[in-house]
Image 1 (cartoon, rainbow, N blue to C red):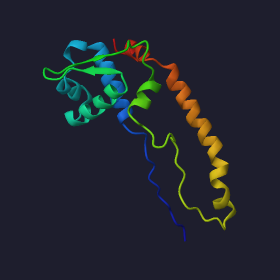
Image 2 (tube, rainbow, N blue to C red):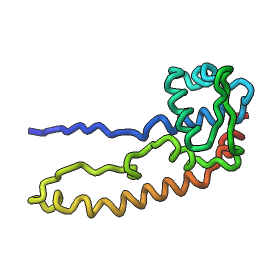
Image 3 (cartoon, rainbow, N blue to C red):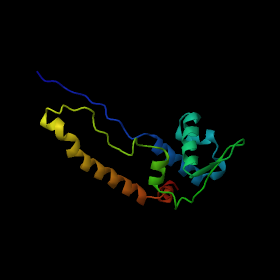
Image 4 (tube, rainbow, N blue to C red):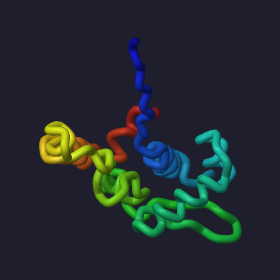
Length: 146
């Protein structure tokens, strides 16, 4: 008898890609960036846009104009890195991109050692990804939209 185990893998939150979309849109079309305009471009609910805009504002990346609406970047696209955005929208929990399963069987040699065996590899993979994000500026992406 063959048993198939299906595991659901969690993806990195879409907040990151939406936040990059929002910042890019503000940089490219600064005069049109109302919540509804941004929501139309992202093709999502304006509530999601407002939530992410709040995170970007708290991180000091955007200024949101109340009343008439609209937003502007507080830094130039040449200064904003993808790592800045990644941190702004809380993509990961407890500063760990990879989470290990809880309570493995300590009577099993694999269960007893899996966390220690994986931790260094996963930490190095996260550091490599974050280093790559730090090298990419919002301006690097914007030139691809024109």
